[in-house]
Length: 83
Image: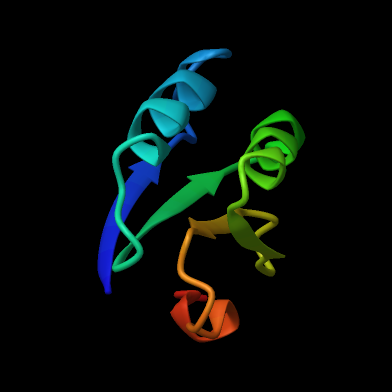
């Protein structure tokens, strides 16, 4: 699967949401968004769920959030986390 990395740690609100939503409108089932952020992007996750995407989030020991969002129903999202 093709990973689209979005490092949102230094971005101001609402830039991460806008970039993510633009990307999610165009990705195929063989692609996924991998976001790094200092906080869990709850509005993004709610919109993604409403639009039929799957997601997985995990916070690492440095309190950095790793977020994966995809349309692919067959992949194991936990295996895509780089923690």
